[in-house]
Length: 451
Image 1: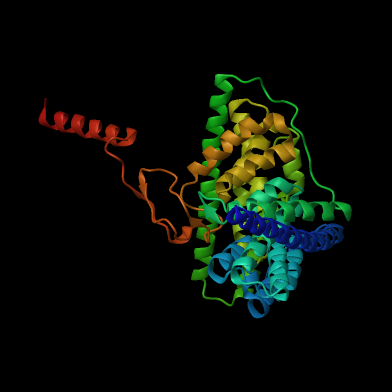
Image 2: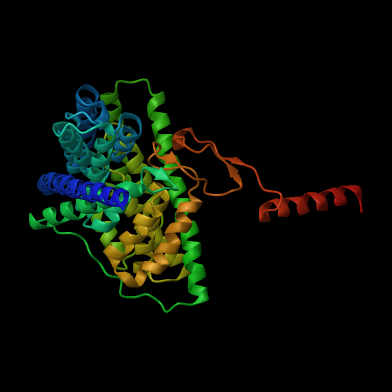
């Protein structure tokens, strides 16, 4: 009896402790997200008054690369990736200088037209402030790690207005095929608190319930499954393009700020050839797709290239908002080809790309309900899981650790970061693919022998 009471007492005080810590973390991150989003909105509106503001993209990428190279190298790229790396390799320890540099570099990049997102900076700023908070409290490595994960959840929840999906995202994005249940309660508390704080200080979020959802039928369900496969292929294309862009950037033996100038000039040229809609966050295009509007079929491909150039050539920002753009516009293309409702499949595409590219099918499925209402949730969840599987063992966050293989037909090394994982095809003898290959070999032998 005494042992049971001791166990419950310890758990009670642990809950109380993390309720206080997570609430404080959520409040800190909520305030920082509010400040970041307001400054970003003001900067973007100011720059938009000038018709050819995007001609300064080379200056933006040059300045961003210069600041990051000499002041905070950890602020490079799309933010969340560096936080995942810090959690896995450094117990969540993040240098304080990363917070202001990431904020300034991202605002410069986005306001002047760089193609990136706003969640990465909020996650990295939130995680950085959580790390500072943990140091002030003199927490050990284990507790600091938990607090920094709360910072990721709070940042994601407060930037998109999805407290539940944001909370799950923070604990799902660290590993592929596993969730840290130990941090589930603190993540929920931090995410919900950050969202409420940001909302209370005037941040308004996108919510667009999808009214048209067909009655369940086998034919429609098959189309949803096909959509999941298509979005998985789009996720694959995004991840591989980002990898290729990084390789090209590394092969150019130039000073990084000079690479920023080169990347900026390329973006200006592409903008003059195609359209300005691929610059910045691209929120207007996303909303147009979700309202049933059409776009050119190659819109999602161009956004992939714009984003890869921005993030690999000195720009700073997140990756999730571009994922939303790519998902919504690829959903538009799929709907037009299959003659389906554009708004419905743009919404499904938006969350499915997140599930596939970031390996977060649960968070993406919940986000579908928080952004688009409960009617679309069952279809979105199926497409999200299929997209997650189709992307394979790769991610826009290469520091994710593989906790489970996506298929028993592949040999992968569990416990390694995705950038180090090599999936080797090894079909099982009694599996469907193995049996199919066995039958094919038998037929081939008989054909060669003339039987």
